[in-house]
Image (cartoon, rainbow, N blue to C red):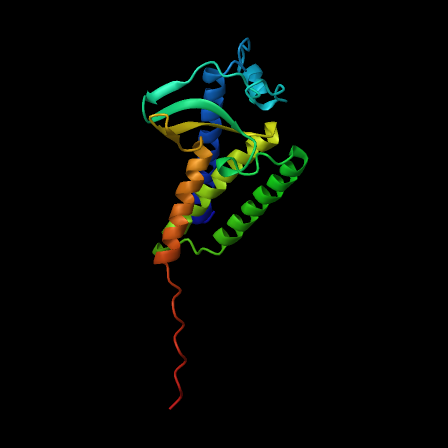
Length: 203
């Protein structure tokens, strides 16, 4: 298998596994969804099965606690995002939102794989895209698994400024997408198309 595809598989699968594992821990530790489930299979069923109806707070899983990592700047708190990044389209009706996200997610995967196949894998100038595209792919698939399983994405990383201003909650998949897009932006600036040499005229 070519080296570039090894990088694609390892990075993308690594992001997916880390993303889903951290979401599992968040649901187990910060919500009551897995209470009473003594086996791993039962806990996974509670996480990936049909979610309970939304409560008064608009959440399907009932939060139990949050973890203050830095009292004035950062915490771990369970949140649900039925929309896109930063809550876009969350007010759209589910019967329209679901098909839209399926099309967008699958379209993104196709485009990422298409552009990744065009990389040679041996040109040092491609290193930003070589790592950026797998990060975006892993992040997109990580959040897509959430949408397939329960119709919303689990977020839990919350950055804030003394609770007066806050960045929208995010997760590992979102972080991988942001880092990957950043690498692709660098690639767009530093990688230049090599000019084709003009044919020499016969004497």
